[in-house]
Image (cartoon, rainbow, N blue to C red; front, side):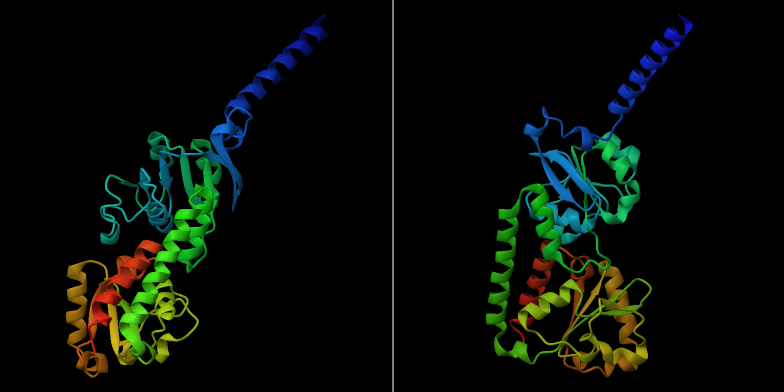
Length: 317
């Protein structure tokens, strides 16, 4: 009798444990039950597969490129990671109104309080994928380092969100703008050397190589690059004042973050005799632009770059 009672006790304890484990299992796994399949789609991604809502209403993005691409596809996230305490950049304003800035790294407690119905994460955050999945269905998008292809990011995300038609339209519109710009500039683009450099808040200068998304836009137009920027690299930092010739060209787009920082950086450069010797300076073809989109990796940023190219290249000799 005692053995029988002990067996029943252990059996009931096992049932209880299984019930608790099942109740606490990740949402993205339990969401694939027969009952819920009608309200969600199973999608493949870098961390496996997840059944996500057919029409997610409370989306959270955990990378800037994903955030911008999600906006471009017509979905406004309720929150996203971004630079702590700073507004979303100018080229996103109007589209990003009301989106909560969660800072650089996702706070799991804050995420739980937001009650998302879909989290768009990436492979950089694979160490917390399980915790994210326990909060809401989570998709891990591939996050290359450095992130070079805005088009692949857009297309991968469009498949996840069932927005492939919207993605195709955005890409087609991009190529139409490229063709319009090529026609507007004319044959000058085949000889024009366009230099792109950034000055950071510490006054460090770095140049853009062929792998950078902005460089790909310039290449799509057929614009030429200075010899130092023709290499198969993303960016090259620590351009010294002695090597300022690396940023020379027929046109120089000098990017910065923040208007005051840009003015201060330019004033510092102007104090150097080597700066004054640059051909692009002597011809007055230096244009200050915003690195919020010149250094970014999404379709909205690339369109903002194209806006600047129309502005500064079309009506100049």
